[in-house]
Length: 128
Image 1: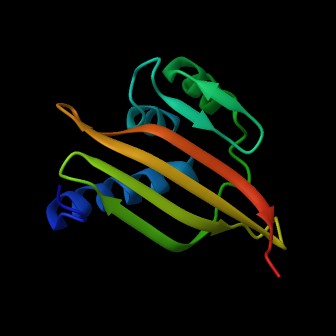
Image 2 (image 1 turned 45 degrees about the horizontal axis):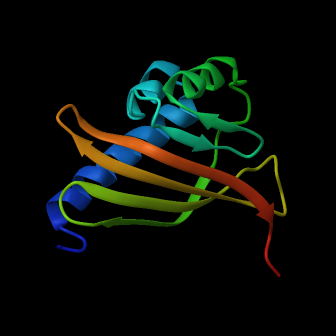
């Protein structure tokens, strides 16, 4: 298995950047399209556990568009072979001083393109 295939890594990095733009713009339709449309998709959020694509869609549709801007730090994308990747990043929001967000996404390549199959978002106090 090839670790960090340059072509696959560039594809996931582009998809990750597109996801970030959709997230901060609250482009719900685009956000929905990034997740695998399956009951197998999972998203653990800061205050919710979402099992399946429909639960993820419902969360996005109900989420407030306020305060979604953020700054990313230490973003790392690692591919495992040509069809599997993990994207991890830290984020900060102006409205949450002293807090640091953590986001991990598991991406898999399908015939229709790269999809998020699992995601985890959490916020912690700024480490000392």
